[in-house]
Each structure stands twice: as structure tokens, then as C-alpha cells.
Image (cartoon, rainbow, N blue to C red):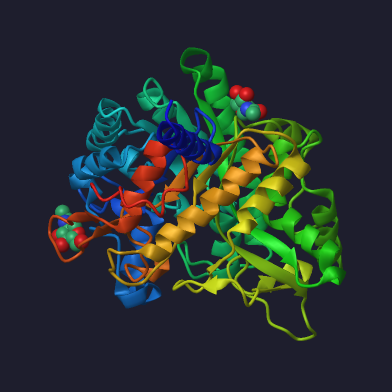
Length: 501
Ligand SMILES: *[C@@H]1O[C@H](CO)[C@@H](O)[C@H](O)[C@H]1NC(C)=O
Ligand SMILES: *[C@@H]1O[C@H](CO)[C@@H](O)[C@H](O)[C@H]1NC(C)=O
């Protein structure tokens, strides 16, 4: 070997080492996600029933920025082939989407299954599978049939039956091809944010009371849906079912707030995790105690947080095949000052139940969304906390992404967000031994961002909402993510070889 050849070989080995060094474990899967109301449109086609978001946007258009609505959105109901094509162009291993409950079951109940609704999801599933992309279905991503809402929705104990019946219909129709299921997306939004703020669907404000009814019945509904799959479908299809939480990393504002901060973690994550992922099950004990004491002081005959029977505790405990969570941002925690108003938990400035106020660190970059500051190391700390608190579980990251406001295709800030978070997840896997096996980029296409309407963008693909065809165009971040998936590594940002989409 000449000196020159030796040098070339040495350089090649070093390069191979470097890229190998930042690779995700073999078998790690990358996906992207959407939700029915945010992309489907076609709100009144065929026999689809009305849901809570249809009702909110039509009855109170001013609740939404620019009076936008999801009547058409990305029109994915008609354009699903475009979604499958771009998912395939990206090389996604899986695509997470949700079923619109009222599209499949127009009455909310299983007395009638919509043929068109059923076929829409059949087409989407088969289209994905043809391209080698695994479908990952969310059963509930916030669009409750309005009829069930009129009967109390998630605060009516019968929701446990209604949700379980709906889940059984979905499994019966699709579980032969769909091996991954998420029962409910972000219960802390469905219960706490909904009833504490009153500003999203259903617009009912009943803070500190209705939210806890919702929490209890939602956990039971999740557990029942998990058990139906486990008993009736898992033996045949061997898929995985779990719930996905919205988690925010909480840091103490200063040392004196360690205990308060840990309590807030047990409140945000714990109310929806302790009952499912611990040996004892039930409510997180420190939180149960605080709410009981507050309730007593306020003159209630019993805790506002409804008790579980032992039978219910056992029913919910262990109902998971993975730990799922969505991650965007972090907060600093301190005690609230006398007279300080705390509102809109968990996305604004604090948690009244714990008299905890939330701040942000000046070094965290503010995004163009009101609730969202960037702290990539937060996701690594969150993963470490989950492992320490609930033990070694398989973890799916089911949403992560950056909000921007403009239409810029050259979204370097989004690439940086993905890169920095993937790096922290990789460190959690390789340094901290956390068993993360999936990552999900939120979101595939710009879509209806709830009360922010179309003013906030999360898409790997830009959508032209003026175009009747809702043309999808890849942003730079789509090209970056494609390369992440191809190389199984986050460290591709400085290579100029990802402009082929
Ligand atoms: C469906 O809703 C649209 C508004 O989004 C309306 O223009 C149209 O007439 C409705 N179609 C039916 C069949 O009600
Ligand atoms: C991660 O979890 C999966 C599913 O339980 C398991 O098969 C795998 O061996 C785990 N990996 C590690 C490194 O613990």
C-alpha cells in the first residue's frame, strides 16, 4: 500500500466511524404524523356526523385566528394519494394519522358504520402499505362526535363504553393491517386545557372540577380499549396499543423549588402515567393528597379529583405496550406570588392547583407560537425522568416539531430544531440507556393548527391553501428529514446532498 492509499484508507475509516458514531440503533423507526380534523376537510361529505370542532368553528368563528376553519383544510379526504406519495418520497417507516370518530360512526355509536368513512381509511391504509409504510392509527385526536358531547362527552362515565365500542369497530375493520394504535392523543389537552381554559372545543370552562372527571373517565376509556385489543385482537395480530401524553420538561426556577417542580411533573405527566405505568397504579399519591386538601379547604365534601375503586385501579394498571409522548417545549417552575393569576394550564403561565407559576429561561429561543420556547436538552431530561420514575419501558416519541409563521421553504430553523432534538434523543439512547424506538416528526403537511388556524405552520411540506388542489411542496426540512431516515443519523445538516426531493 502506498502512503497515499494508506491516507485515503485512514480518512475513509475515520469518516465511516464518525457517521457510524451518530447512528440510531438498527430497527429505530422514523415517521411523521397528522390528525383527522387538522387535515381531512370534507367536514360534511356523505353521512359524516358533526364533531366538536365542526361545532366550534361554525358556531363561534371568532374563537379561531382569522376565523379560519377545518371545513376543507388540506382536503386530505380527497387528496390522500398526495399524502401517501410524499410520505413515500420521504421514506417514512410509519405514518401516524387519526380516525375521525364521526366520519366512521356518524351517530357516534356503532349502530351504523359509514361505508364512505370505512372506505376512506381502508384506502389510506392500503395506499401506505403498498409503499411499505406502516400505518399508526390514533383513535382519538380531539374531534368528539357532537352528539356525545351534548351528553357530557368525556365527563360522562358512559364515555368509557362509547369509546370502547368505537375502538372495537376500528380494530375489527383495520387491525388485520394496522399493527400500531394510539388510543388517545394528549389527555392533558383533552381534559385539563379544555376545561381549565374554555377556549378550544368543546368550549366549556369549569376549571379544577370538570377536568378531573374527564381525567378519570378518559383513563378508564383508554384502559378498556387497550384491554379489548389485548384480549380479542392481539393473539391474532400481535400489534401494540398505548396512549400518548403531551409532556413539557419542568426545571426548578431555583433550588428552593425542587420539590414543587417534581410535584408539577407528577401532576402533568403523573396524573396520566401513574395509573398506567406503576406497580401500585392509581393517582400519584402526592398529587391526590394535595387536591384532597385543597378541596376540603374549599368546602367540598370530597376531593374534586374523583377516587378510583381498587377494581378501577387494577383495570387501568398495566394497559400499555409502550410509553408514548409528544414533546415541544420546557418551563421553569417557581411558587406563585400572592395574588398572581395563573391561567390555562398547561400551556400558559402556571398551575393553580399547585400554586406553581411557570417561566421560561432567557436562553430559550421563542418560536412564533405563543406557548413555545426551544430547549432541546429538555427532551433528554424528560426521557431520563420517565425512565427513573416509571422504569425501563419501550418509548415512542409520537410528535416533535417546530412552529413557524411564514411560508418560507428554506426553513433552516426547523432543520435545526429537528437536528438538535434528534441529537438529544440519540444521547438519551446511547448515554442514558433509554429505550426509545420511534421518532415522529410533527407534521407531514401544514394544517389547521386548532385555534391558531392556518397562521402557524409545522409542516415538512408547505401546503398552498389558496390552491383548490392544496398543492404540497417540500421545505428544506423535508429534504433534511429524508436524509435522516436514509442515513439513520441526525448529523446530516452540513452535507449538501439532500436536495433531491
Ligand atoms: C358543506 O359545507 C360547505 C361549507 O364548508 C357548504 O358550502 C356546502 O353547501 C355543504 N354541503 C352540504 C351537502 O351540506
Ligand atoms: C426495547 O424495547 C423493545 C420492546 O420491548 C425490546 O424488544 C428491546 O429489546 C428493548 N431494547 C433495549 C435496548 O432494551
